[in-house]
Image 1 (cartoon, rainbow, N blue to C red):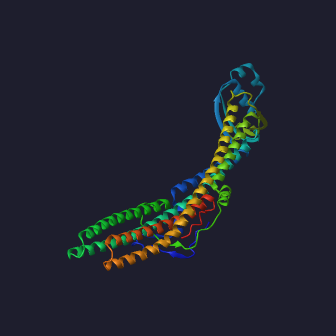
Image 2 (image 1 turned 120 degrees about the vertical axis):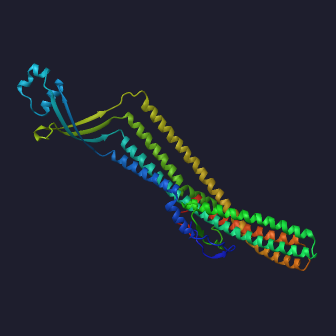
Image 3 (image 1 turned 60 degrees about the vertical axis):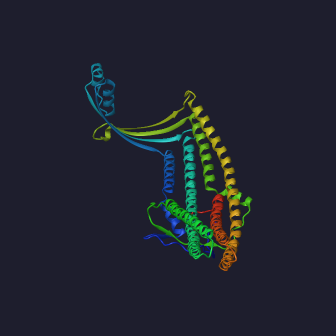
Length: 448
């Protein structure tokens, strides 16, 4: 889904003054900044890097291992002393005399070994470990993609909320200005004895109410600004500004619910990632079952038994090693059972999450439809409410109606403008929320 501004139909109010030294962000710029600096998103990205490294480690376990060792020792142990002479090819006939064999002189022994080990067969464990790591990495990458989508949506939501809060403050300022005018006018007329005192008191009560509403609107503006900075990964004491709110005149995209659910089950990255975890669990089952199978390695080594690495004192060997655990106290069997239970658990979680995804699509679908209806009605009501205020104000000026009628008409206009603002923003937000629920909302598609 792409959120384009094709034509500007409604611009609600005039933005307040830009904070001193504030940097102005478009929605696209705010999104780009969040994708690069949101700490929660950066944390998820590091999880992806860690998963990739574990896959490389699992892949490396299938390759040969080359090791080098060097040791130095002194001993008069009969076996070690005689073996050292054998290794260095210094045995003579005199060394076989019983006294020299049983009571040898202290020998200095030097041993250097270069060994190569190649795993030939591990019962399928190496392949299973690699499959587990690869599927886990796939899950991490899909979760990162989903996290980018969520951050993009959060920026859009916070940006619209800040725009709405600023326009809401404009509406509150307009209402307060009218209330102040009524309070001044009625106070003057009451002093002149041209109206009853109750009209003056009514105007003062209305003024106090609008002052409170204006304060609430200012508080909402500050909170909305902090929310956007938080999502963008900015310090809360930084000064930012945004572009004015503009709502599209084009109707929302029409989609069928069944199509939206099908798209979500096929495209949701978080669901696909959970399926990858289920596949990883199946691989872990195979890895655990490998404990019941033999392991075969080939080991070759070259050895030097002289501190000067004399070529005459070197030797080499090649051997095959086969191992099979015959009994481990039931540990391997229990491990297989645990892995199988974990795999079944994830299968259940996948099925449950598929239903959760469908429910999210339905909820977003209904919210989008409701907002679309509300916005269509509210736009028409705003025009009617403006006409009503104009007519009632004329009648009040002619003395044909009372102040309370004018205040009620102005209150209706404030409510109509507020509803048009709220429903218009809700429509844009819910359009994006539906795309997010479907899995068709991409991190690069938020446009100003």
